[in-house]
Length: 332
View 1 (cartoon, helix red, strand yellow):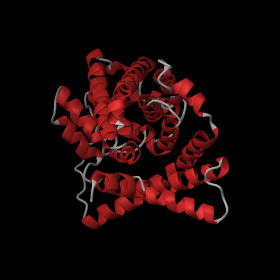
View 2: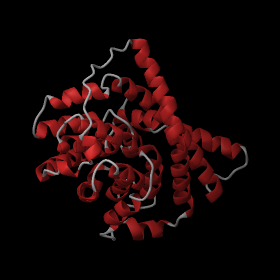
View 3: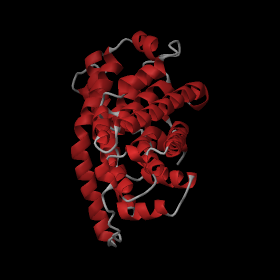
């Protein structure tokens, strides 16, 4: 089984796109037209992303069952300096899929007495570079893009946490979190059956939470793919606009979605001529700096630290976007 077959037929499910196109044609619909093409894009992406979502969440939740908050805290507590930031960033890849889900864990780690920079490395990494995003990116953009995306995302998380640690801003954490006494409870030992049941429950819970955003994201992607003129996208987000990455990052911040809702939009934008780094910067902006997440985070930290966090993430995302734009010709 060669790599192209895995990428196109297993992860990309190109066979599903052909099947849906044939079914729509059999029903008398012109899939080359705007309406038929939009319907084909919508059905294909919703089914594909939902299948991948369920499989990925099941596998990742099973792995996550070995890393409950208490155990993650103990693992991170064994390391110091930049190595602690690296471990925190790596642990972030096997935890929840959006920043709103990561913030309660961040609060727990902070109240447990872990260094502030370490907890921020976790907070940056968790929504930006989870394992699910890597597999989904592989299904759309290929393995090179996915691997570089994850590596650069981890670099942003490690550097961001390290910079925040150097600023010594512990007093910028809200008082009620600093007063919480950490309870050191051993992680319960789960049986194999309990781990499998936990993974199944996580699939159902996460699917219920993110499916509306999948529908919204795919719907926007279908409109972009079939109704927005290519010249518009190229002008705003193409290579001739040096501010495209910055614009895409800023546009992404007020939105709220996760990686599963943003990928179809990124896919459609790329097909219309947007640069790779620009669409990836948009995705990172949405998943890492969404407005609802920042409102939640403000309850845990004071405005000064929140501004520093947002500034570090924004600069990191923009840098990643420009790096991808420079590499686009060699990795796509």
